[in-house]
Image 1: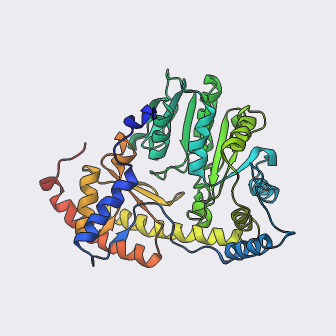
Image 2: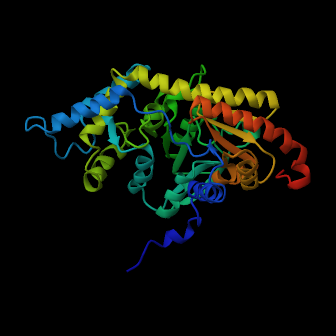
Image 3: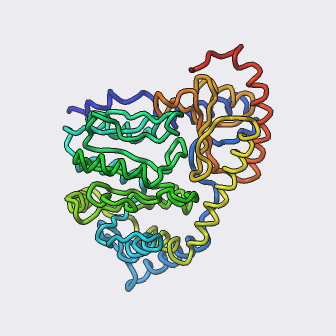
Length: 399
């Protein structure tokens, strides 16, 4: 037996597994410490009542001979595909139901999509970036080139000159930085992809958080994108489906990837469950206001954090069009993680876990209750004032 040789090229510890490991070790040592997590981006607001009602109704339907559903369509039931089409239409974007593929989440969709590409491809990934992009391509044996996202460009990587790529990853609003592209910036990426005959894998998992005028919610708002892009979306952060698992992928019919993906799904996927798809449909139909309220609550938490950062003079991005706040801590990210946990009992995510450009930066999330977010901010303010006093004495600066 020969195992995948690319496994040896992975980092020993996955970022979020290491975060959990360190938090668990701290809790074991201090079991009554009341740690507040603003680290891993999991939601905390319960499911909408409408989603639960849809779940119950679908389960009851499945209990009858007339309403029982076995294997579903590989690309999703028409009722959900059409709801997604209408969701785009409400934003002035025209797509066809045959271009929509229901998945069990954006992460799986993006990772599994690499099945369509030969190993002889160069992949362009921004740095810093969601680490699953990198690890999936390492496992696939692709050559990876990085394009820098830094404070100087607002953590929005732009197409590099004289560097060619076949597959391009774009996440907007970005995880981890919370930065989001406007139409002019994305047009440059679309033009670059067309010029290089490349495909853009566009992660729009956080599009529901966009509020600023001019910020793009779908790559298909950009002229030419249908000839070079695939879009991945999710119900996880807009409807609290992290534990339910449902997302979708949009692949224009003009792309050969459309039929290839359907073929791939027929081979390796038996479809997202009927019950889950009914729940997802309810979030785009009668329960859409519930999703808006959920997103608004998380955005309110983000505003609590950024308002305090403004008063403390902390440099950051995000927090407006995304549930993430990315801020400059000035020291090794993991050292800051440990120090913040020890002194303030707050969990963050070290920026260096997202790439070399992330060192010296930290990600916080707004996925907690308002009460816990306010408590975390109170703790953080006292922590930060003391930290500034001792930072230069106890730690080496990153830059």
